[in-house]
Amino acid sequence: MNVEYINPFIEASQSVLKSIANMEVTLGKVYLKNSPYPSDTLAIIIGLTGKLRGQVIFSMNKEVACKIASAMMMGMPVTELDEISRSAVTEAANMILGNTATILYNRGIAIDITPPSLLMGDNMQISTNKMKTVCVPLNISNGGTIELDIAVAE
Image (tube, rainbow, N blue to C red):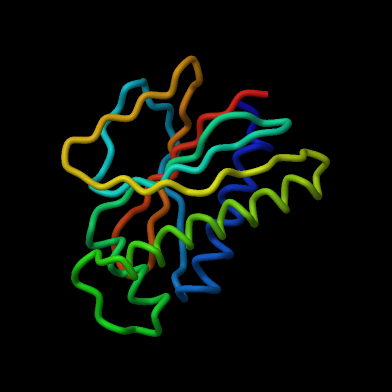
């Protein structure tokens, strides 16, 4: 997978999480995942169409999701993933992909994104059919990691 396709996802993740949740994001070691692979307890899946086709999956544990939701809700304590906090985390992922689409468009790569789907559960397995999945660990400043799994084909 071309690195010029991966960098916009990273740029958008860092920018959006800083602006909506005041979280600094640093990168972990990027690696390839073999399908099927395990997911954390919460996964947000957004499809891509256009010049790039595939899906992007944001995987995180409950604690990280609660931190993001709390920060998006002006520091209101969030200890459970109720409807409002799930909506906030899903919207964060949607905003990241919207920004990614804009960055790619400005570089001559037009894509559209699907509405996000949120999955929650223990022992989830993700399978990306016939596509390599690049995992970009996003370490957030207040502790925890979001795994940004990118599976795209041109």
